[in-house]
Image (cartoon, rainbow, N blue to C red; front, side, top):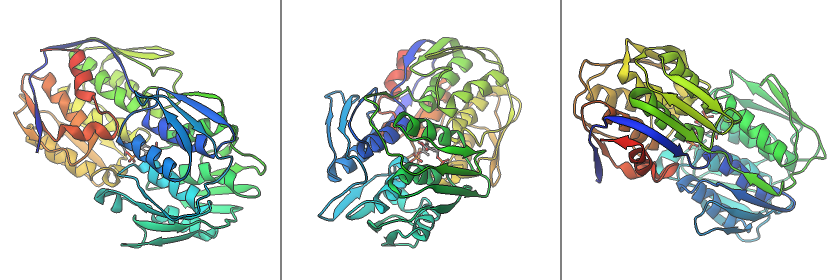
Length: 427
Ligand SMILES: O=C(O)C1=C[C@@H](OP(=O)(O)O)[C@@H](O)[C@H](O)C1
Ligand SMILES: C=C(OP(=O)(O)O)C(=O)O
């Protein structure tokens, strides 16, 4: 397996423009495909997760022109649900933002669709979404294990007046139902069962739907109503914001070893919940300043925090490795969903943090990290998880090198991450 040795970085300074948001790219692509009219997407993310969505749309008969640099795409909308005459197979890798929303949209389309993914995708939950769709008439047959990918979806007439969905495992199930609901007849009410996790991702969904002409009533994240008679209308131009989760690594680097690091493409105007990562760094002692289109950080001695990060599950991982540079014991709580993502991130994080010498308590839904006096040289396993690779690059901000195994796994959301990190690093 390939590995990358990062030598100690003595200082970070400079500006990084982050690539487009994964969450926004895949939402905008799907809604552009379902819209009436043509959408010109700019600053689209070029990464594995987006490639899977693009390949799927193409197999579903959607016409689009992707620029050579793959960050601009003009999509010809289908003016409604997909409609294919031959059975199609869609391989969606390990992209939750493709699998979950497409599953719902396909259930309300015409055709027969087989949805497959990487081995880890076959273990990630989707049963609550399948069950919710079945209650309104969807025809979904799981091919290996009940309630998991791979599955065959035969498009059907759905009757969506009232849908219930479990909110406790992933917000992507609700996102999928919300984005699909304008394809149904009549008013649709979606009721949430249990405590909804990762709430800010629902704000991204509602904001993107609004840009494509569909309004949703949000009753305090307990229920959502989509009134009849709405359909997606291409907004003409859709600018994808820079990815706030991707920004977290550079912001953390600046907090630990700045200098001043400015991340551009995402700022105070962003709809992405992960910009709230900067508040956590601030609570740790970093100096943060905001512009409409940037977040800037200046390094300062960091102290430990005790924080509930359910609202920013992806960027929360970056706090776990930033904690190696903070005085005291950092506790991150309400993060059970880490166990359901690219790998069991609670177990993986605990194992790899211990390799560099940290004292770690791994709870069912929390992690506590106490840094050692001196970090140890370690070879970090990344579990095919882009965020494990990016988080552990921060170890190089100590006086100890770090070896990252399988650094190419960042291709899921950030193919040139290590080049961009080195652009602000002084060895
Ligand atoms: O809707 C989205 O774009 C996402 C929602 C979150 O997942 P959960 O809702 O499963 O926590 C997040 O972890 C994922 O990377 C992207
Ligand atoms: C959880 C993640 O991805 P997905 O969209 O596949 O859920 C992630 O990017 O951290």
